[in-house]
Structure formats: structure tokens, C-alpha cells
Image 1: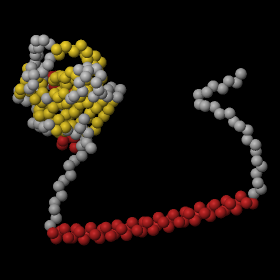
Image 2: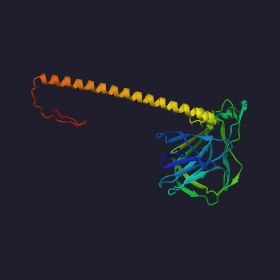
Image 3: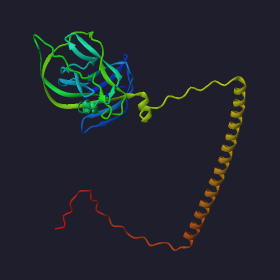
Image 4: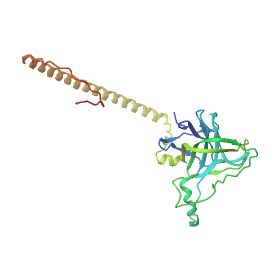
Length: 296
């Protein structure tokens, strides 16, 4: 079964495209860094969402989402909540957002953008940082600070990574009203990284298997010819297997006969030798590994 979710400790995360969980490839886990990463296939123009989940009723936590190096949004889990939460876009208001879309990466040779393109190293990554949290408090009169999402900048061709895609914001849509909470953030307990590339690039780098080429159906005449050739080949293979089996049995019989001859010679030598004197064995003390022997 293909893996469609990343799990580390008490936390899980996954990506959905068009409502379907995408397969995760080349999953790597680093327990020391509390990090799990994978590769996923991206498709230009497709919207996607990120689902996160706390698997145990323990303590509050917060999931911070970064897309292409930019902070996008977050989700807070109270201690008793274990149902998944979804992140589908960058918030633009208390009840509006712009959906996440995979898009073609635009390049430029304008050297004035070379310095600002250094952040291109994060393009192609969807990252989630999970932290313990405390002091969860709802704002009585919540206001909203628009998330700055730098998704439309061109990247200098000398600064780009080996990727064809990036993430942009789609057209603003209405969503269910969100709760704005004030929290205290503590230590990081998990990190998830989804590295996205086009299927073509993943195949070229051996990260996913290439789809098999379609096989043309033979005409009736060709089919009969191939069938006869197949039958002849199968008969030939059966004959080869029979010959190999006979040869193996012959070698086995020769080895058994040789072993019997060696045993008979050994028994004959033992009968001509005088019996050995028995030596009385004294009991030996047993010491376990790690014990100290006192010689004083």
C-alpha cells in the first residue's frame, strides 16, 4: 500500500490534491532532529491542502505552516482535540483566504533580482513546525493582520533550484470564520517537510517509478505466430529445467556416496585404536560477565 501520511510521535500530516491524499515517496526520518521528510508530485494549476492531526490527548500544540520559505498560516490544537485540521490557503480576512496552487516557476535574467532571489533555496518545500503551546486565549474583539505571501516574484535563473514549480495564491474565496487565539509557544516537538516536484523530475531522479508504456495489441496473424513461439519457448524451458534437475540429483548422489565412504573409513580406524583412559573432571566455578573475583 502506498504511504500517504507522515507520522512522527504523536503528530501526523499529509497533503491532498483535488481532495485525494497524494503518495509520499522516499520518506526519511531523523529522530534526533524530530524531522520526517518526503517527496510528492506537483501538477501545475492544481490546488492542494495540508491536513494536520494530533494523535493523543495530552497537551496543547500549534502547527506553523511555511510554503516556499514563507509563513502561510497555522493551526492550534487544544489538549483534548484529536480530530484533523486543514490548511487550504493564506488567510486574507477572518472569513476569506486565497487557496494554495501549484504554478510554473518564472525565471528572469534581470541581475537586479539576483540578491532577492537567494530565498529561492526554499522554493519547492512545504514545511510544518509543531510546537508545544500553553495559555490558549481567544481574542474578544479579534482583528486580522494580512499574511504577506511572496508568491509572484520572478526568480533569477542563476539562483533557482532544480524545480519547475512553485506555490502561488489563487483567487480569494469565502471560508468558515476562524478563531484568533493568543498562545505561548514552547519547544519544537516535530517537523514535517514535503518536497514537491513535477512527476517528470521525480521520475528522472529515480524517486518514483516510470509508468509502463502501453503495449500494442497484435493482429490475429501476429498473435498466432507469437503464440506458437511462446509455446516452443515454454517447452524448451521445461526441457532445460528437467536436465538441470537430473544433473543436480546426480551430484547429490555422488556427494552422499563420498560422505558414506568417509564415515566407513573413520569407523574402521576407531576399531583398531586402544580405548582411551577416562579422566575425572573436577567441577568448574561459573562466573557471570561483569562479576568481580576476590583473590585476597
